[in-house]
Structure formats: C-alpha cells, structure tokens
Image 1 (cartoon, rainbow, N blue to C red):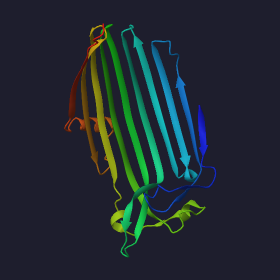
Image 2 (cartoon, one colour):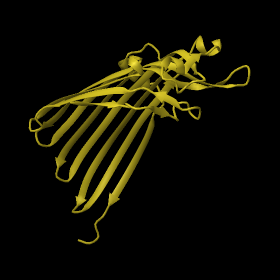
Image 3 (tube, one colour):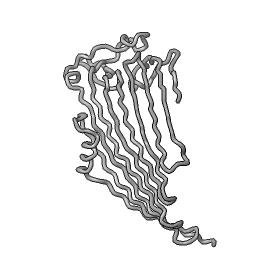
Image 4 (cartoon, helix red, strand yellow):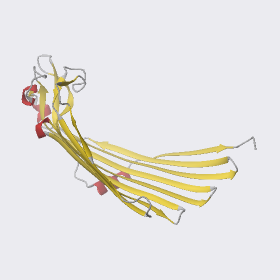
Length: 246
C-alpha cells in the first residue's frame, strides 16, 4: 500500500501539445494497494488497485486487478489475472487543426475510456525433459471523446480553465467520435530435452486484432467474440540446440 503525490511545484509539459506550446500541469495524487496471500499454499489469490486524480478532480482513473496462482501436483501450475480500468481525462490530446484563418489550433477533448484484459498462463511438466507452456491475453480498450477545446493563448496560466478555449469547428465538435481496440495474443511452447544439454523447442504464436472508430455497445465478452471473426496471424517456429562438447 502506498501512493505518490507529484508535480508539487510549477511544472510544464512540452510534449502534451505534440509540438505546440508547453502546458502547465497541476499536481496529482496516485495511491495504490496490493494484497497477496501466502505463496507457500497451492492456491494463492491476489488483488491490486490503483487510483489517480489530477486537474482538481477533472482527470481521474481507477483500476482493479484480481488474480489467482495455482500450484497443483508438482507438475502443474497456472495463473489467471483480470484487470479493469476506467479512465477519465479531461484534456486528452485530440488533434492539430487549421482554422479558416490558416492558424494552427491544438485541440484537446474529454476522454472517457475503459480497458479490460485477462492474462492466463499454464505450465505442465510431463517429465523432467518434456514440458508445455501456454499463454493467452484478450485485451479490449474503448473510449469516447467529448467537449473538444483548443489550447488558449495562455497555456501556462495558473487556472486550469484559462489554458483552454472553445473550439468553433462544428464538423469536429458535433461528433468527436471514439475508438474500440481489441486484440488476442497467445503462445504455446513445447520443450523437449532429447539429450543432455540438447533441446528442441516448438512454438505456436496466434494473434488477432482489430479497431473501430467508435466505442460500440458490446460487453468485454462480446468484443472478445468479435475477435474470432477477424483474420488471425499464426507463426510457427522450431528451434533446436545440440551440445557438442559432452
């Protein structure tokens, strides 16, 4: 359990506007919590939580990650962890636009984002010389933009509100859009030590990913199901080593 209180002094970020003026940054608070059971047991649950608050409460996030480790029969071990985060960033970089007067406008928008993932690992030892490892991670991150604003002429102002101004381009502000990015990554590794010091590895890597210009209404399970409608990427590898000096 702990936390960080940061940016206590006068801090400017020269990267937030992607090449534009430096912007003053307010202080932030980031507490965290981690709980883990006795590692000597065969079933070991754990839990972590992280929080973030900045910009006077306008920007905030919370993430929660329960998990469990299993160690059974000496030969078999596995782990499963979940993570869910909800992030609201009041002034997320949105894009560079040129207005009707030919002036570059650095725009920001309120981002409401949720990210959900699961990580699964499995290890099984058939014999001291033969083992199998499996890994899979479905991941979905979706967000919606709103309240598009432009950087004002006073990005270093003390007051947060004075650093931004209204953006008048209705073609942008009427429908700022969003995103939905989803992916599945998995690996299967077979290991065989066919002679002392000499090993054969067979690896299968399977991946799928896709993105949309809107957050959509699917649940995490629905987004993961949609992944299996996408074209997969499969990679197969063989690696062999042989110890000559025996």
